[in-house]
Image (cartoon, rainbow, N blue to C red; front, side, top):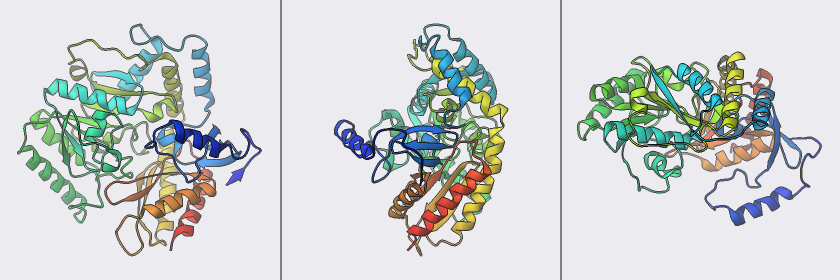
Length: 441
């Protein structure tokens, strides 16, 4: 790793901070690394820890630092807004909230769109599920196997990844559908057309056994599940089946939105042959670290609630100012195009490395959303120990990455800020190559 002059507390303070963390915060609150680090500041695509160590950031606060650390345009907008008014709630008119809602509604592709702001992706998905079940008068939800939709009671109840679902109790009845994982499962050996046909047949068979559900919720690319995705067009084929029965389609764009996939601004657009979703949820990158989430829905669906509601912190002025500045920067600098170009180079570089390593099963992804699936060499079995070792080795080399995976998978997750340069992509790939090679048996 690279070390600059110390910028924070004295050497060893991270260990003491971790002891304090463990004594006052929940045991189930996940923390990376055997010796956790305290990040104190960042700039561009880099961050520094409390000991002055510099890292190239390929995880962006879990896909949240979308444009860059300490982006001047966002910092200025937040500072100026804080000097006027930080918060007032939705009980009062709020110009920054209306401004951002107008822009997102237009970008969403959903006709006659309405936008409701929340403080997180979890809350956004909760809201979408509330709207769907109220609109359809049904508490049944279709979700994808290997999915993740948040940490609340309702979101956990529909999550199809047992590693992130601590209880089977739920206010909803959830039915799980095939299709989110292309290279594993009963249809993995089929070609793309056959895979889609088999998943559609499975969905139709499932719907023949139950009363019509309220909605299907699906991540176009599954995030926590290891950046897995179906062939393009799967959700369009599902959409045709759903529309015949009046079932809504919710696209969970918390990780895939805002151009991260490079090819499209929204993940659903790879499956848009039968029109946009009825709802999409967003969060993470739009705030560049500020707490913003939300739902976009057709007016008929959004307005179906027959009781009062507000949001205390959703749409608050300071986060909306950040979102407006961040979105403006993203669009004016074509960061979607940069994600496509630089991400394409990065994934090809990593595939060339993976071809030489028996412990790498697959390098997959789109744009700057890349997963590296690790297995025990000579088998098709997940290797979580290797994933943990590579995570540590990458950090030692000066690179921060993430990890994930679902049923019997171990995946390294790469999702740097969308302003990543070619030189930084090459640097990160070289560090990761050394980390992968150092942990191969």
